[in-house]
Image 1 (tube, rainbow, N blue to C red):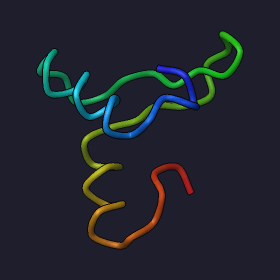
Image 2: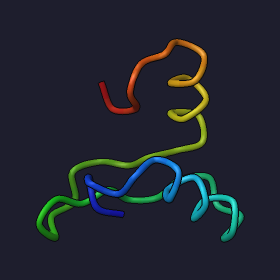
Image 3: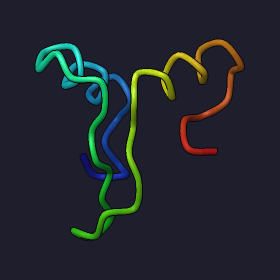
Image 4: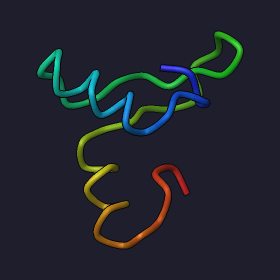
Amino acid sequence: MDVNTPLDVACGVLAKRKIKKVPVTRDGVLVGALSRRNILHAIITGEQPGN
């Protein structure tokens, strides 16, 4: 998943593939991971995932 992938697209990938976490890349370099937990935390707190 690229850092510029919209969150709704990322959520769709997690749901469709039934996975809990995806790697996040910038220019092909691993910069982190996005998980269901990150997304739920963002919804509850109103923060962007990764901040």
